[in-house]
Length: 264
Ligand code: PEP
Ligand code: MN
Image (cartoon, rainbow, N blue to C red):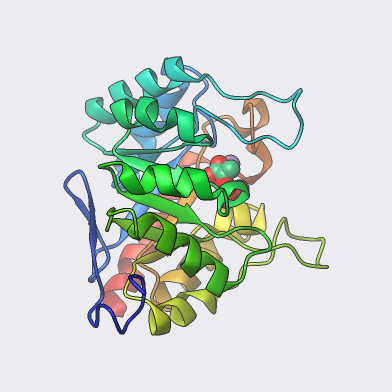
């Protein structure tokens, strides 16, 4: 299997623009859940860049539970993301939900995100496998580690070698957090696969009070990076406001992670 340790003995690394993920280099992916307009994204990007984020995130196509909730700005949002990413010299990652959107998203993004809800959308996986952009593949909310690795296999087997996995929590009986963060997925995946894996404590916990400690735990567990949502005004955010870190919280977190990375 192409994702397996047997196929590739050493850790692989993936480049997103000039940013290396894996092989000792950490991806610090941050930004709002959704692109809401130029001004808001510009403000958030300025803060996350100052904190030391090296990749900017933001959704233009949002997989919302309710069809009546904000669905994202579409191509207008992609244009804003590209402009702001260029302004702050950060490569950008954004979700693609449909195989028919892959070409469009590739025109603007440096990395294609496949969301938890689409981890087993096999046509989407194959289409991203044909694209010339790295892929951020998030674990499905009821997917096993084996399922995640088989989904990566769909992308790899189409010729795209640049896959980064993402643990973002799974559904459980615990209802005080949004999902249950499976921290063991990090060393578990690393034992079986050469692919980089990062952790998203924002969607895993849904709670800003838990995100910093879970980011530190991720780095300590061997994660190749973190993925966090930041918003300058969470109460006005159009999606996932309650889990967003404020800019100063993100700044503190990044300082802690830098000290931790040095200590490790
Ligand atoms: C997101 O990154 O905003 C998102 C929708 O994440 P997930 O697919 O992990 O729920
Ligand atoms: Mn989100």
